[in-house]
Length: 550
Image (cartoon, rainbow, N blue to C red; front, side):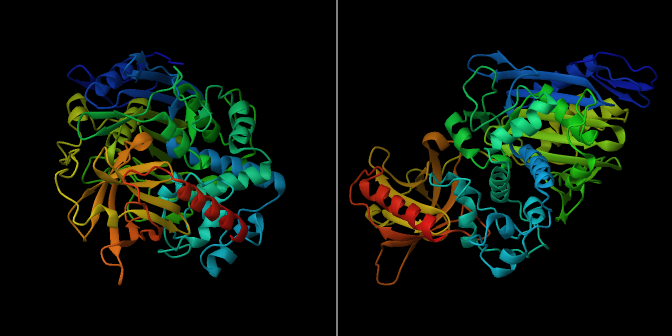
């Protein structure tokens, strides 16, 4: 997939023999770009990286770097499979547009008309008027409530029934509230229209026609197989932690929001498909242009940009993405309109930037973390410049020091709260069963072996450490399969007449804009409870009531 070559016409200045500042180009020097990227990876904390580039309808670069499995030292290739997280949203939008066209349904169709009269949002305005377009462009003003995905009782089918309990804090159609849950609803609607699982539909409608033979889904792929890059979380500078693959599988439940997995080679086909508005690499039409075009139309502006660090005069060149379309962000790089999106999930970071005017696309995915998109966007910028003939604003020295010398970066040190800080009350006052209409059930129990009060919500568990702040505030250290997902903050509240006994828990780390409140339903008497008969009974009763009344 990699095409080597030289610049046919150029004026260049090379810095340290690594990066060339070139003014007029006509052909990509893939070998030089390969060397540049390999050098860059050496000063970053991403264990595995894959990059691919398409230009003028051809794959001009595709390469893997580092190790997809650190323990087994398996080299990354352009066929290594990575989770691409929220780049999945473009797949969700593409699939839904195909299905809507097939069923003669408009994007302006109210959601209630598709899901039925029993569906509703928390208020009548959204229930009556919210459309499929509103779901796809994050215009509902409802906070993300992302951690509801941890609930083991959540399914794609019952997610819409929970939306009536989620209050809005932003305006309808005049605010931007990014929501994985709404793309979960889009996933379910696609399944309703297509009569199959979302995974089956994407394979039939997108993967197979485009020849994306290696692409898959976190929900069904064997994530321990040799061809998968193992997800790695990084805290601080070099503290790496493997992400439990069972967590990756479960977290991907709302598939259209972030479950797609792919390779550098397969994503070339995906980029070409969008740059040509519906063609595969052989020039065959896979989707009508008129059906695709609504996907790219700007529909919702938001303050700043997801690439807010990359603006002039802070940096020499601006990369903007301050408008949302459907499954894509719109913005500019060096004055050229771009179609872009990022993907961030536990252990994976991805980005795609398309420049339609130049028939250019770059895809990058890595394991590890990438705060503020510093690695992804800067590397994508360099690849754009190297491919299209712009003078790169980064060189060998500044790439490794970035964001210096332009500005400093504060590194968050990975440090737990002081474990010697005692609980302020008898631990028995914290214990019990709590419930929330939208989120479901939560259990608080005491783990004698850890000497810690523990919150269990769905498949998530957190050991609680007292912290400063409101009385009875706690930091939650992730346990079990979610050991890389910590939670800051839980606040336990006592009530009048209850003494020190907790009557409700504000899960601020579940949703900062409007924290869900879990209200006490029972108590735990054992010193070291696990999921008891009572827990299972409450969960079953709640599930039955939810299914019947909601």
